[in-house]
Length: 290
Image (cartoon, rainbow, N blue to C red):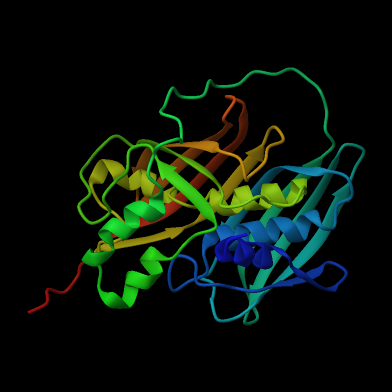
């Protein structure tokens, strides 16, 4: 396994402090604060470890405070209900005595039933597309040295954008994009782990979708951006170490917030997950430098 995948698995392998209480480490993945996908994946792992034989079908989380990458996070799991078909859990993520994130998760038994789905978009396959890591390496020289390492850092999830966007010179375009993604190496055969890895990966690029029509990006100093909430619905079994198509769009931005939606498909065209997230995206005044 690559070092980045090893690090992700360490993040998701929570320490059980006592019944219903888990502790997870923090890492610098995308910047000075804890990556939203990290706390989302860890919270789902904490909830899933209190459920026997059922798998997550729905999670809803709220990001309440910025997480500290220098400190571990404690996850407190409340067993709300274990019914005949569903199990429900509430998870509080705590750091420095304050709740930084809350998750509601519902787990279910596998069941056959009526089926339909939105078709997978007709897009170019992952073969031959440059990875996000390769694209970032080509632009690294444009960055100040103090943030160049973070921008160029290898990630556990290989991402291959179908229509790459230059974050240093964004141009207004339709709020619709897609990329292929998978874990860099083979993962253990653990369904909960693959769901947690997908939760982790689902936070990459999603919030920036609402910025596309406005020609702005995270790399600009006049943009204040943060995830506010995150919801996922898991429809079918999948492997996070096999190619998945992540199709994202944004139907609306208003009031300093943008709503983003995502659909995740297996390469055979099966829709395996749906994602929704609202993000803060404020324009702010930046003092001119002389």
